[in-house]
Image (cartoon, rainbow, N blue to C red; front, side, top):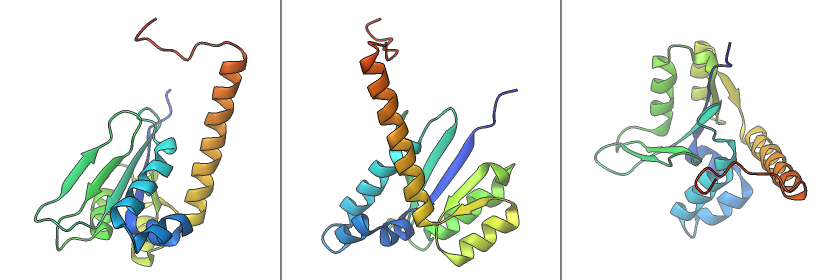
Length: 158
């Protein structure tokens, strides 16, 4: 029996404010700080095993979703008047099995709502550690493949 797909929901600006490297960008360029978060979390996204969705507070009249496609996370910008917190809470509330969700935040209201539904919650430091461990694992795999002359599975030219 295959392992069910896991879902990571990230409270975007909450994590941006918590991580020193993204927080440092905020005063100069909010979009760059958000983009750096997406870049750092892309290593966790695997459409077959762990789908990453980063939810940011939005400024527009309607919600906007940006699909990274394939190897990049899915990004949602909440519409004006609706917070990222509310979007995350709705996603978890409507999930058929909230136990498959991990929520990355330090927002107490989201933590409570997620735990009530049976989702797992991790803080900013645990998320950073997870992303770093995954990045190291990917780098080791690439080095091993290169040293062994292995095939990376390129089906385009294969």
